[in-house]
Length: 507
Image 1: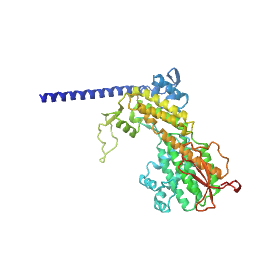
Image 2: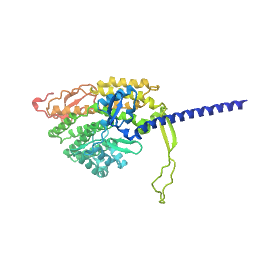
Image 3: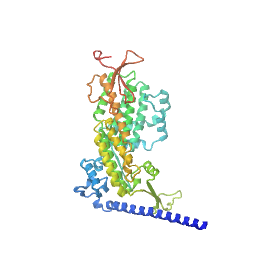
């Protein structure tokens, strides 16, 4: 009797497992067929790929506006069409933002890639580990001596990058690459090499200060600010944040140079003009998030056309897997011939390739509509509030975050929007701190050089706290005075020698 019952239980388990497998397999087939049909609409009909005009909602638009988000032109949902149309009307679509027409310019991103992408990571790691970690920047003579061999080998790279920065037509642009499987890909990995270049100039500054060459130290500092300004102009959040980090670091280095005994008023005037230019040509925060939205729209298109693996990072895929939101299906690909030869000079034997397809458990062809609507509406709120300083944006940013939290774990959860909206607050904080760091230094210089006070540089854009300007004595030399500018929301005060005429000095 018990054996019969055991067999019945096993039979039911087997049937249940078969039903689940059939359901998953059917879902995969249907989803893949739907996606493949969507892709074929774009790929197979080459004459439709960029038609002269497209019927979109109730309007006829130029087909060119859908470049970079080709699948969007097939949307039928009126609310999503309305949100996309707002971006089109603002002329801030991927086709407007990501233009591949920079061949006549010198691209510093390409120069950085060529300098560092195949470099000796071990030696770069040695330089990173030996670099100053604290706000009060300094490099000992012993450290410089120990690293002399590495720095000598990297010197040609530093000079090559400097030569590019000296060009009047130099810019920081996107690098466009053609992927055989996924089409055009925008590569901004050069942002990761900004800190490597900064390292080389840091050590050059350390050597110059050790040898008493103050002008050479200032020269290196100017190059660092120059590349930070170029990188910030591209307005991609990751690149803009990298630019913010190296410029904040440059402010710390500048503080050390200014406190050097050989520093003079003439040098301060030069730094004042450099910072004035940086502040006058500051990349507006709105531009950063306009670019981010265009990138997000490309992400939705790439998921619909090529799948998750083509649009998300491995870390993002891993996060979705941990939350149980993905289905992984392994399947064999057609045999591919390996054109390489083995040690015997014979062609390698063709082998079946096993590929893993990753799909969301919900049907993204349907769920993406609400997901993308939420994303575009949230980004519009974020872009609109960028006209205010960071501390005044917080209520809107909190509202967007709370709305995401309220949808988490529910059927209406905007899975992709949540990924795309991550990190915006942290990036905005860095950009505000970057601005505040430059403003504090600029204000200190303005007071010392008796320049007209800039009326809009009153409160820290990060914390709302007003900047505090004071005159302090040098602890080691009481006869020497400094102008110190600080804010409770900033990392540390910035000091410059007080060069004002005696009649204008006040305690």
